Image (cartoon, rainbow, N blue to C red; front, top):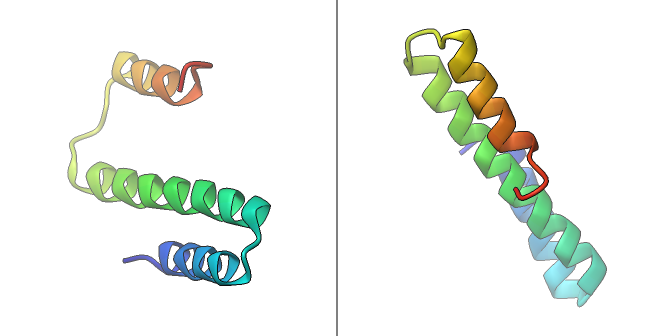
Length: 67
């Protein structure tokens, strides 16, 4: 697990223990983003280079309003 994921998980735990609902929502969002980023980094580091079309498709998935 990356340091960023561990740090985000810790912040979520602190927010939960304090009963701070707004901080808990923010920490949950941050933890999810860090987990996704760590997964993407693992996949990209082992995959062959992407074509420009593949990059565009993945970018669209990550930047769409529906996401």
